[in-house]
Amino acid sequence: MIKKIGILTSGGDAPGMNAAIRSVIRAGLNAGLEMYVIYDGYKGIIDNRIEKVDRRYAADIINRGGTKLGTARLPEFAQSEVQDKAVEILNNYGIDALVTIGGDGTYKGALALSRKGIKCVAIPGTIDNDVASTDYTIGFATALQTVVDCIDKLRDTSSSHQRCSVIEVMGRYCGDLAVYASLASGSDIVISRENPMTEEDLFEEIKKQLKMGKHHIMVLVTEKILNVHELADKITKECNIEAKSEVLGRIQRGGTPVALDRYLASSMGVFAVDTLMNGQTGVCIGIVQNELVATPIEEALQMTNKSNKFIKHMLCRTR
Image (tube, rainbow, N blue to C red):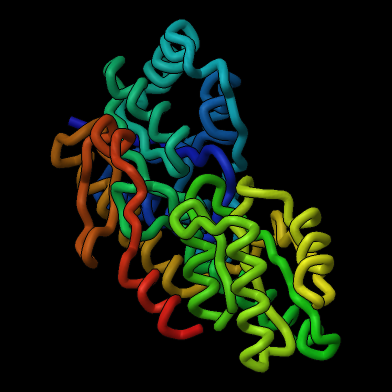
């Protein structure tokens, strides 16, 4: 029987995390449970930064970006002795269940604690949308809107100066932000791991579009694939068009969460509490074909990111 639930956020922050925190706290309290927050992720457990909270703690945070709990990375948490210390501290508080919000690193920590007797459920919170066990992660929709807004603004100046804009977006090893943003913004070319392109092919595509009458070009690139500054210089030399590079950076993480992220976070938070109360542990919450699901974390970590063939088809058809 679960009596006390702790909640933490870990890894990179994502818009909508506060909505998930609010949802978990209120769902737990409405079920008659004691609720505890843990500051700065798994590090907060080791540092004993744990606080019992009531409904007032979750007031007026649903519309706030970032995470009220703070977040930090703790590489040492991979060590069994550090995990044992975390279990001991949680037991001292009487916390018998944990809801963690974050990406795959957060999932690994939850899985480790679950194996050591702490009931754990993970919620996907990352702007990259790189958790394969769910169609969408909390924060992705807001980050996507931010990227599209930036592209719209860059298009104005790119068009005015008849330039090629080479725009790097976040995503780590997942190209969803770049691919979805390209389709939503009407950008001309997208380069990601799911949609690779050699420099020679890129130059040929730019030349082709210029011959078709385009007077400015928008190229989106997922981070960590290539150096967009060097690429812009090469485009200028090879394609007879001035090219400028833009790195959107961490601005993509911030901002008020859009309605879809608030809805997703709120739904997942309630479902996470229900999942724990139904006796499940070591699982992560996801939304698959518009249905909330609980997948074993170990299985989720083995999944590979889905490649959306329909979106690739749409990109080709809308150029």
